[in-house]
Image 1 (cartoon, rainbow, N blue to C red):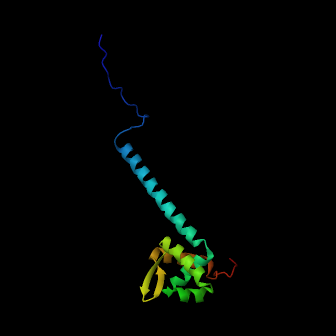
Image 2 (cartoon, helix red, strand yellow):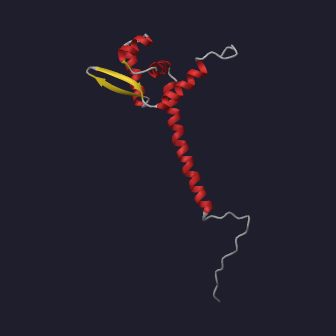
Image 3 (tube, rainbow, N blue to C red):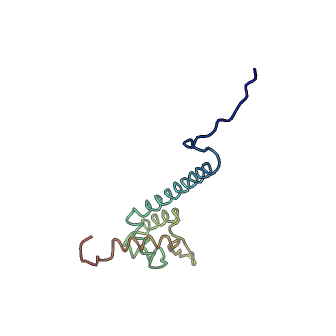
Length: 134
């Protein structure tokens, strides 16, 4: 006797494992992988901002380009401290540099950094309209 294989009919409550559902699942997985990558970038960005000296440096640079000497004067910090924090900000790609002779000038790397600093300034530095304490 020969057995004949037959395809059992699919029921309405069984998931379809091919076609649009698989494509949707693959897209969802790709979207989640991108979200994980972006969450890591955001976390690294926030870690860089979480240091008071680095945040002050970025706030100073949000006003315009500065040399290391100018940043030392603004922050009242030693050159070695300012340079160490600027190195971290360069590594995190939050600041960019420009050389003019022996002087290196720093500026914010992009408008995303400026937008986050503006939001922080609005949340923490501007007086509340109703006069309440923050």
